[in-house]
Image (cartoon, rainbow, N blue to C red):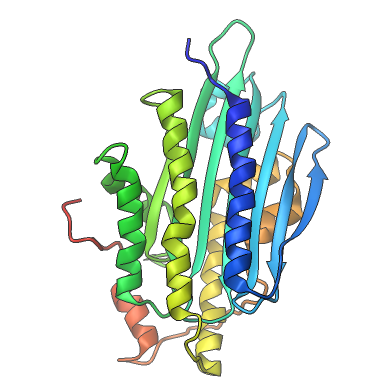
Length: 306
């Protein structure tokens, strides 16, 4: 039987939350994260940290949670019916960043560990995670950089990982009712338990640590760009897609709500300001039109064989 050290995973995740918050606060330069600790009646709790009204980030949330219980949520047993009748623990770090400047992309990352146990049987466990980028006024060099960091991270473990998890990200973060991706993708993986605990854990940790390497250079390159009120309004309109995805499709949001997690922490991913507009169509030849024409369908950003 493999040695599955959930305490080691928890310690890493809490340290990752600390380091990401420190890097984001330094990049903002004005606001700091405010922490709320919370307990879950059925078992577990977490640390929610949110930075608001910053010089760079309108809202950034970085959450750690560790919840456990005797009964699996319905969303989980529907996905993995063999988990019925097992006690479970789920822990992870999840973050969403909504910058103020429309020229800085919104971004999301998550790394997580799940284990379900039953007396007399081997535990069922896996890791998951990834990161994705949602630009409003994309710069192709930034998108290439984002995917290069993702590929470099994957290639340290298995050269098959990047094409597999890049494709999974494109397919997962897809708004079927809009026929468009949420952004330009990145990595998404789930149910990872091969080639064993140590390597799976190491890969999850590497993905978590790669996020700021991928994201912060993009922030630095774009944070001083001037923007118009029209560009700000387009940003708010496109943020609506984020809300639509999280409330309609996102498995993590559904799991959190069904498992009795803290609602404020789960819905921290929502942008502080957002708008919808009936029948919006971008002007032909505009930067807004280019987002739709070039960036909202899966692309081979690195020019490699997928």
